[in-house]
Image (tube, rainbow, N blue to C red; front, side):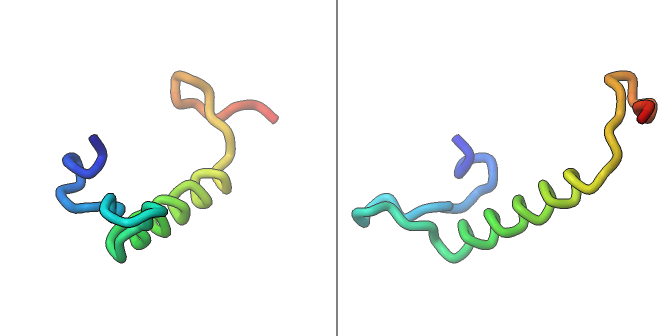
Length: 53
């Protein structure tokens, strides 16, 4: 489970609807930032070499 891997509660399972904890929201924001950075990178082949445009 992701919460076990990160070592803290990502969401409050005791509320309905389930809501993110402050640390869970921060994790989501950081993950989104990292995905945005990855989207800005040029594509690469499976062997790590840059893909030809």
